[in-house]
Amino acid sequence: MTIFNFSAGPAVLPRDVLQQAREELLDWNGSGMSVMEMSHRGKEFMGIAATAEADLRSLLSIPENYKVLFLQGGAHLQFAMIPLNLLCDKLSVDYVNTGEWSKKAIAEAKKFAKVNIVASGADQNFINVPAFETWKCDPEAAYLHYTSNETIGGVEFNWIPESGDVPLVADMSSNILSRPVDVSRYGLIYAGAQKNIGPAGLCIVIVREDLIGKVTPGMPTMLDYKIHADNDSMYNTPPTFGIYMAGLVFSWLKRNGGLVQMEQLNIRKANLLYDAIDASNGFYNCPVVRSDRSRMNVPFTLKDASLDGEFLKQADQHGLLQLKGHRSVGGMRASIYNAMPLEGVQTLVEFLTHFAKRHG
Ligand SMILES: *Cc1c(COP(=O)(O)O)cnc(C)c1O
Image 1 (spheres, rainbow, N blue to C red):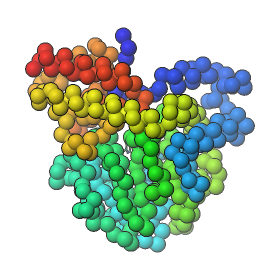
Image 2: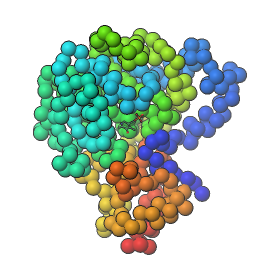
Image 3: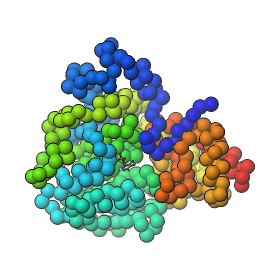
Image 4: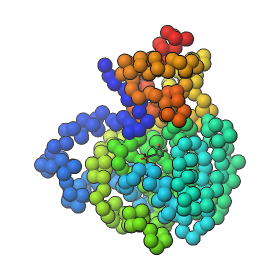
């Protein structure tokens, strides 16, 4: 039986990538060493890191005046590093609240800056992205932060907010590389690796050069983007194996037609799944408004929640794993990142249909 893993993160990786990693595990490229055993300053690993960065730059067409940083501490550390590095002499920062991850970013930023909530999906119970016309942005804010895909609530931006001269900052942890994106519209993009990039332990930051290097005295060295930028992310020992794996994923994406191809496939997968949910006559329900539904994380509930346990048990028996929803919302969630093949979504849809027939 083929197993399909719908985990929200750490999540499924492309099979080809895992196979390549297995083949190279004991001896990378004839070096006689595993990537895990290499000095991060040796020529082998320096080459691996440089190729990974070059491939990421080419996938996202990252302009020259942006730095790519390979950091640790996950997206959570960025919740603090962003205000610490970008506040400078400004007094406040703008945040959009679209759900659980926005809230966490906001709570952390409040420790370092006055946070202005420009728009919130809270009164609609986070089932949509607040319309841009309603946003109350401050032209004097140090930056405008939003979460481009709410991994828990399943709400995704299908457009890029207009922030004028205020640098736009996006938490793209769960939808980076799922579609082409105009990096030049952003001041900073960050993403923990464990959803769409590679194993946990690596966090990628793409930041416009003019925004870094203006931190206050007393800033811990490891929290300063400038230190990492000046040292090509090798100020301390970087997460070498994570960078290697990310590099294999980038190269897999390039081989498979890049982000244009990936977006087409992601649209197809998401439509298949949402159509099945919507066609179930209410047996399944996805609360998110159609225009803002995530292509990556599909939350849904069963009309009869007492069937949840049976649903998960049978799904497991069919090789459909990790469909349980986030503990804060309950129900189910199918995460269908880049590495989830179309066949996985097709198999899930067949299962959904059969289960509804038997229990409807
Ligand atoms: C998973 C996730 C995070 C948290 O990432 P960590 O690496 O655990 O810190 C933050 N934001 C979003 C949108 C996420 O999906």
